[in-house]
Length: 228
Length: 255
Image (tube, rainbow over all chains, first blue to last red; front, side, top):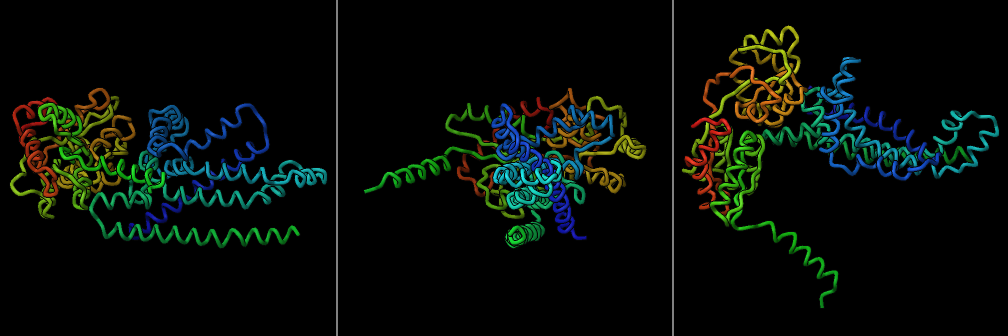
């Protein structure tokens, strides 16, 4: 395969994994923030935005220090499981998931808060357990907002550069994502490759945006019809 | 009559552009391995030329060349290899007659200070790679980082490149290689002797690797330089005995 397509497929793989990991964590945290009251909830809510606000290099440094071979988590992972995250695509997934999960978390919280609690109560009265209420009532009703957050998270993960470069490095075929491949090509003066790469990533971004705007209303329209 | 909004916009515009051009600024793009020595020399030069302000831009020489080739307003370029400066000359970026070699450096293999590796040559290094003690080797990206190009050429000559390349962690500059080794994220790395000396407590030099061509650093004034006289004075200062003494203190050899 051509280097550009290798980088694209790696980027998509990392972004999909990051969206899946960040999505599950973000939806869970969003639900907790929307449904529970505890002291310091607003502080937690603000802290969760930190990955969006902090420079990616700062996140990259934190990750390097924590999950590196000599970091507290990294040393434990290596001695217990023999896992070494630095310079692996899994490391890139962690970096991308951390920068992108606040998008899911924020929109999931807002979406859960907009769900009318009477529907959930009606389901409980009809005998559904809490898990069933969540998966059959709350999640479908909040899906529109969550989907918007997931798409934003996916595009953010796809474009992630700084933290990824710091912890996953730039290994062609293993951790060299499209955004990093562009940087390398420009550094090396390979303008032809750089042109090819930026064209691919621009087209990919447009395709995702168009797909997002087409998919989202269709699903919601069907669901609305089904409810009536 | 100007509205308040127009005045604010005008004031912001002036504030934004006013600091862009400063007559006595000398922008020096220098190889990453020169970071510590040049930072000190820049201060010395500024104290001797009170009106001058030296702005350093440290990165891999190849990356610096690309910035200059794309029109970055750089006054002086100091590269870690002849090849990058040759390319700058080929692209007609160098002010004729200003190029001069000012230091020499050596390629070394470093390991984290707690490493148990004891290889004393590339052949022993190869043996360590075979038995699994060397699973990750940091090397500057050969396309843009001179130290990576030197490493690649010696490894190719020794017939080891294909083997090492599979274990290679590519770095953006020699200083990133040093950082990876110092943090223990890689088992070994190729850096210059002067870089190894920056972190004597965190990295250990295994052995020096003889290079087929000596590692010489050229410096030159760029055609795009704003104040060519001041830029030339800086390059002359770097070649002066005073600056050479400072460079020697950081481990650089005379050209």
